[in-house]
Length: 557
Image (tube, one colour):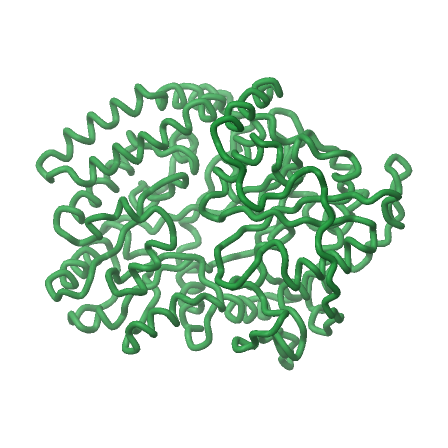
C-alpha cells in the first residue's frame, strides 16, 4: 500500500526547511487572477476535430449539480510548462484570459495557471509539495515519476464515476485508458491525456557538413563514428553530447532482439539507469571510444539541459541536435542566422545502431500526460477540475486553443485544415509550441476526422516553413521501424525500493558513467566493473531483487 501521509508530511517539512519557495508559484490562498476580455469566435475548421460536443449531460444524483456554476467562487490551479520562450508569460496571456472568460466566469471558478519548469519539473514539484503550494493537478509524462509522487502521498484516491459525471466527453474519450492504467496498488489514482501517433522527436544533422567531407548519410553506428571522425579532421565540429539524467532511454540501440519481456521489466526503467545491464555496457564502451577519439564534445557532462545542447548546434560547435520539433521552433532560424549556408537533414534511427542490430526505440504507452489530483484539493475544487477537462475536451474550445483566431493566426484550407500564419505577432500569438502545454491535459497532438488530415496537420504543426521534409522523413522512419518500438513494463504495485534509492542512484550514476566515458580506453573495462559494483551496493541490487520478486508473480503489464 501507499506510504503513509505522515511520511509525506515529514518529507514536506524537511524540504520546506531546506529549499526556498519558487518565485511566482501559485498558493492555496486562491487569490483571484486577471479577467481580461479577449475576443473569441467558433471556427468552422473545428468541426473536423474528434469528440462529442454534448457537454450538457445532467449530473448523476449521487453528485452535486454545478452545471449552473458554484455558489461560492472556487479557485483551481492548473500546471503549465514554462519553456522560457522569450516574451511569453505562461501564467497570464491572451489564452489564459480566454480560459477565465469562457470557462471560469461561466461557472464562478477562478483558474490560476502555475508555471512548472520543463527541465526542472521534478524539483519544482518537490519544492511546491513541500511548501503546500503545488497546483491541484500533479502531472508528468513518465509513469515512474508519477508513481513516485503518488507513493509519497502527494495524490488522492479518485472516484472514476465522479469524473464520468462531471466530464462525460473527456471520460468517453479516455475512460478505457483510465480504467486500464489508472489503478496502482489497488487504488484509483491516475487519469490521462490521449496519445495519438507521434513522430516529432527528431535528430537534426548538418547535411552541409556531410557533403563537405564527401560522406553519405550514415546507416549504422560504425558509419556515424566515421562521419564524426571526418568532421573532426576537417575542423568542422563534433557529434555533440549531453549529460544523462532523470530519463534513461540511452541503451535501446544496444539491446538484443527479440526482447525478453522479463529481462526488460527487470532492467528497463525510465527513472533508474541500468548500469550493470549489458546494453549499458555496450553504450558506455562506444561513448568511451567517442570521447577518447574526440568525436563528441569533450565537455558533454556540462550540457545539463536542452538550452546548452541547442546552443552548441546553433553556434556550429556540434553537428547534431535532438528535440521535439514544432513549426514555431527558433532553432533553425537561429542556425541560419549564424550560418546562412547551413543545411539540415533528419538523422535516421538506424544510424545509432551497431551493425547487425535493429533500431529499437522506447514505445509510448497508450496515454500522454499522466495526472493525479493533489492530496490537498477539496471536493469542489476537484469537481471544477473535471468540469475544466470537459470544457477543454469540446472540439471548438480545443481547436481555438490549438490554432487561435481564424484570419489572424491561421486560415482554413479547402479540406478543412488550419494553416498557421507563421508571421503573425499580434496579441493572440500562440506559444512557440502551438500552446500545447495548455491543451496537453486532454491530447498530445491536434486531431482531425481522418488520418490523411492528421498527417497534414502534423506537418503543419511540427514543421517550420521550408522544412516540411523533416517531418515527412521522420514519419517514414517511424513507420519503417515501428515493429522495434516497445514500451517499458508497468508494475501493478509500486516498487518501494525505487522511491527509496532513486535520488541517490541517479546522482551516483552521473558520476560513475562520466568516469566510464572519460577513462582511457585501456582502462575502460576495469573502471566499468568497479562502477557496477558501487552502483549495486548503493541500492540497485535491492531494486533488482524487489523487481525480480514481482516479475516471478507476473506483477507487471
